Image (tube, rainbow, N blue to C red):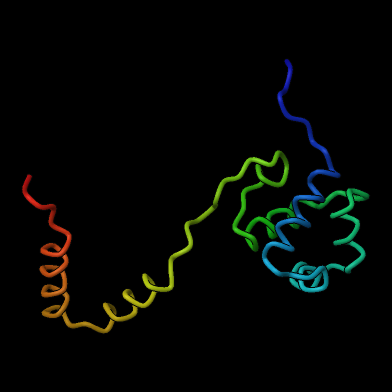
Length: 117
């Protein structure tokens, strides 16, 4: 059996570093979250040591990435992040009475109705 992809600790480390920097996080901050030393984070990022599975899972959750991205560079978003607008709308709706929710629902149906062709 032949595999298309191979594990490369240096590439995995580069991806951890890239996503950490993209998110504006320092090695110190990541180390604090993972309860590790800054040297451990540096060693992961430089491919000198490998991440334990539990740390890889936490890194995936922190940065909303899949393990496929870390291991193979395949980008997949774990969860869609709700926009600030959506969160605000949900917050407003949660305070509405049933009567108001029915009115909002009726208005949305009218607003989003497709025009007749």
